[in-house]
Image 1: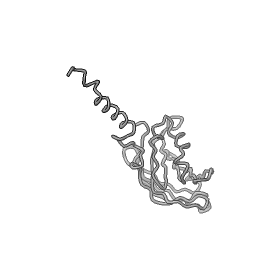
Image 2: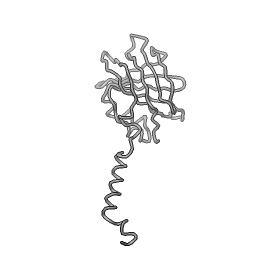
Image 3: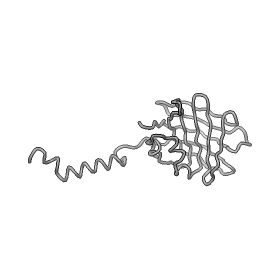
Image 4: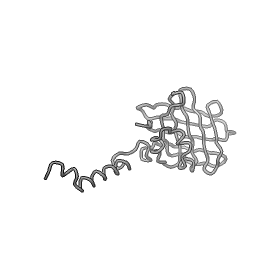
Length: 177
């Protein structure tokens, strides 16, 4: 067999095609934001009289327009595949417009060095529900980096439109890594 014959054989071509397809579909590696890699949440979220359990937490490391780091924790009832979100050049904008997220009741928790605040959304409702430490939210968050992000959130004002009581723990997903 000539030295280059194996390079051009149909078997090698088929194996190369299989490797390309497998790699592009993630068959050999779990994406960092797949539902199987999501963290855990335990608690509930009430918006406009509708209460849903919170069972899943995804923590995504982001940077703002000034390059300052912050973390977004997405709390949902069921896992959502966020691989395309963290693979995008602008993960926050992609997440804000991501149909699978907007189709379910969820809370986006934004955490930086100074603040913790929630922007929550009820499925089937275009309204946004906000809560901050300043206005009726007790928040404790620790970890991040190489350690799992852990936290607890609790509404302290029964008159607020967002009522939440939840604990969560999730590994930090770093887009592009």
